[in-house]
Structures are given as structure tokens and as C-alpha cells.
Amino acid sequence: MTLYPAQSPRRRAHARRRFAAVAATASLALATPVAVGPAAVADAQFPSTEGNTNTASLMTYDSMIAELEKIEQTSKHGVDVFTLAEAGTEFTVSEQGRDLYVATVGDGPEDVWLQGRIHGNEPYGGESLMALLKQLGSNNSATYQQLRQAYTFHIIPMYNPDGSEANIRHTVLQDGSEERIDLNRDWMEGKFAAVESEAFYEYWTMVDPDFGVDIHHQGLKTEYGTGDDVTLSLGISLAPGGPTLPTLAGGEYDVLTRQMNVHVFDELSRYGSINIDRYQVSGSYEIDIRGGVVSAMMLGLNHRGLNPEGHSNPMVFFETSGNSSDGSLGQKARGKSIQQNLRGLEALLTGMASGEVQQEDPERWEEIPHAPTTGYLTDDGIIPVG
Ligand SMILES: [Zn+2]
Image (cartoon, rainbow, N blue to C red; front, side):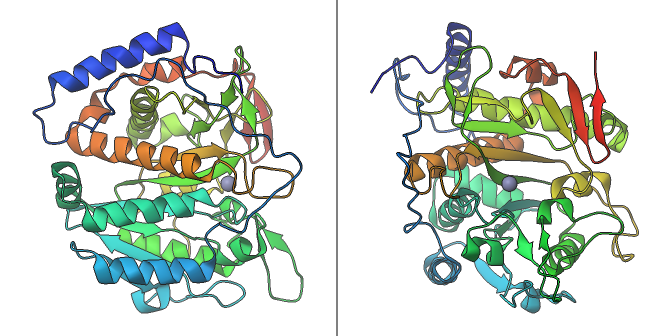
């Protein structure tokens, strides 16, 4: 196995600067816990699939329920696990009739929405949120204490249980059509084809969160310019500086979402096992879709009259490289992939609570590796730039 520096010299220097800055503010309760000593040489490569895609150790729907119940029973800090039926939404179960689960923890005045596995073949959003929930429920460190005081977390480990059980991206309509619906294109006027969308949308209007994260997987990917394996991409589903995002909330989300991802990039770049770039599609397009759940939240979608006040909130997304479909990684690199999501979530949440995120320079979004942008991928096709 070839070992090579995971970071370019520029990024390593930057990570060192951040490291020093964190050390200098270590007396702050919310300074992110850091690993001692930088990883000088490390391996950010993902393993070869060698044609085998094993998924046996991935979290199933039943194992998620069992684990949620165990966390609820053993946590010291008030984890509450419930179904949307118990929450009182009008639509309560998946297309195939599975209960939809949420866990809450924390007593803070601000609500944080964390969702995983809206695409069923993208498992580690779910598994990393379970790992985070366990920490929020039991970790007595000052950092976690502050998180519970600042926020009430709404954790959705498996937005798409039917797709998860079938190991497919979509949910399948049960109206006789067998139509496959991408739940992350379904929060849109004239859509809401799948019942999961109705159910979680209504829960969103009950929560009115302040911000959140959606965790996905992408294909195996290499970094533009270096060819290094990318293990994690950071995304914003309405492109910063694009046709839509600067028009929302007086431009506030265009700034804050970039600050959120810049902060995660800085905090995670110190780990040699993680190599981050910006999420792009077809190589050089910025995603700018309105029907994605996180987009609709930023747009303040008012569906069925459930959001008459036009609540909206900023959201970012993570994309772990490799998924569980045939020919991709399956459960290989599982521990490392879950860990990088957990570290990203911890960095973002502690940074938001301490105000460090809001101090970041949003223009440094440009420093996160990416291909030169050639266009925006919108619901209506490509809008070229430049
Ligand atoms: Zn996805």
C-alpha cells in the first residue's frame, strides 16, 4: 500500500495554523478536542472493492430500532426516541408501512435537524448519527454539555427505511405504479409523491429548526488536480453565489453555509485519513436544485399550508465517498467513513455553538479543492457560467 501525504503543503500549513489557534483558546469550554500531534504521513485512500460488495454488517431497520431503544434506556441525558405517529403528523409511515423514527436530545433553545439515509444505499449518514446520538446521550465532557445546553437535536437516522432495506436509492410507490421516487427531489410544489416526504415535511414544520446537516454518499472520487482519493465532499444544495442562494434570507444563508463548510474543512484537514473536497456534479457543475429536502428548507417551502409563516433554515450536506450498491465499497472502510462523518458533525456543531463558524471567512469556500466551475446543475438543466 502506497503511503503519501494526504494534504498539500498549503493545506497542511493551514491546518497547523488552525491547530495553534485552537490550542491558544483551549480554555474555552467549546474548543474542539484535538488529536495530539499532526499526522505527518497518512493514507486517505479507500480500499479496492476487488469485485466484492459485502453489506452484511451495515445497519438494518430492525437493528436501528433496537439500538435506538437501547440508547434511550441507557442514556443519562434524556434521549427521547419516537415515531412520527407518536409525534402526531398526519402521514406517519413509509410507503411500505414502516414507522419513521426520530430521536431528540438536548434542552437548548435552538433546534438542529440532522438527517441520514434519505438514499437507502447510503448507509453511514444513519450510522454516524447513531454514533453522535450515543455521545449526546452519555458524554459528560464540557463540549457535549454545552451542545446539550445550546441545542435540541432532532436526529433522523433513517429517513428512507424502505430503500435502506432494499439497498436502493429510492422509495417505491405502493399505488400499483411501482414508481421509484428519489426522496431528495420530492419536496417541491406539485411533487410530494411519496408519503415519507409528507411525513417528514410536516415534522419539519413542527420543529422549525435553526440549521442542520444531511448526510449522503457519493461515488468513488479523486481530487481535481492531484488525483488523490477523496474520502468526503462538502456540499450546499443551492450553490453559493449561484442563481438562488444569494436571494434567500437577505443573503445570510449564502454566507453561513459557506462558513459552516469552511469550518468543517479546517477542522478535519488535520486528519491524515480524511481528504476533503467540494461536492460537484459531472466534474465541474455546482448543484442548484430546489426539490432537495435541504434546498426546500432554505427556500422556506410552504406545502399544504403547513408553513404559512415561511420558516426557513440553512443546511449543508456531507458526502462520504463510496456506497453500498453492487460494485461500490459496501461495508469496506465502514469504521473510517462513520468516524469522518462523526468528526465533521462534532466540528460543525461545536463551532456553531462557540461562534467560531460565524467568524470564518466565507470566501475561503474557494480554498476547498474543486474543479473550476463551468455551470449550475438546476432542476431545469444546466446554466453555464463564465
Ligand atoms: Zn444521497
